[in-house]
Image (cartoon, rainbow, N blue to C red; front, side, top):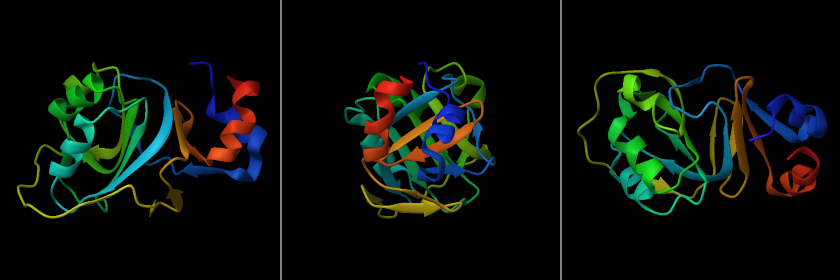
Length: 166
């Protein structure tokens, strides 16, 4: 992948949303990009498992668990993501099994690590607009991540720069 988030920020200026530098990459892909698919969870990752079993088509799953301190993704879900063609996951929460997830060639950005997971069963919402850390995530918009950070670009702006920067 030849993109750099800094170049995209320079090109699009105020049409880029930048996620604060609170998210760390625990996956094996140093950089990743794709159209956004969203899911809002509450102490249960069953709906995320179902989502990752569907064809990823190089999309990025944006997962909001309201930064609650329990692991949402680990080795098993990352293997699902790789097997079904997901480019990456961005978790407003925590992950585990990072000694293994760092070897799987899928992006995995999260707030941090937690060895425990939740065993509750609650409903989830998918393909909805999400907002956390001052950034809006809409299904169909684009998320790009590299060493410099994580950015979100709307679909029209992405079409405008694709030929120029890729």
